[in-house]
Image (cartoon, one colour):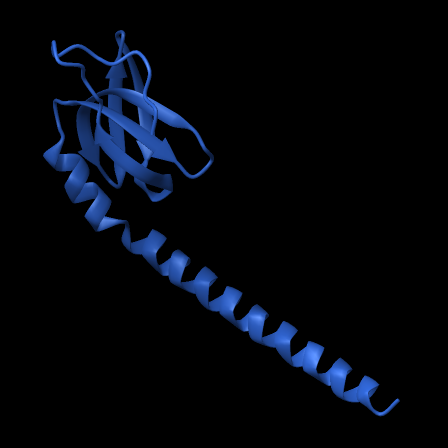
Length: 110
């Protein structure tokens, strides 16, 4: 009977603590977005002219040859069409896997 107020107070404290952590993560992500993700931009600049595979936050993937890296964005070209990908939302950036003959693999498993 006396445990109910203490249990209720404990739940409120835990909810406030989690809310504070989420707010801190949101502020950190906002600051990072304003400054730009320099690490990913530098890595993308190293891969200019190479065939790459890009995975984004929304479980999307893009592939093509990197033509340009500017203002925290990457310009990809594939089959004569250009695609612009924002580096803020890129999770993984890597060279497109090739088989032993140097051709693109038809199935990328990881």
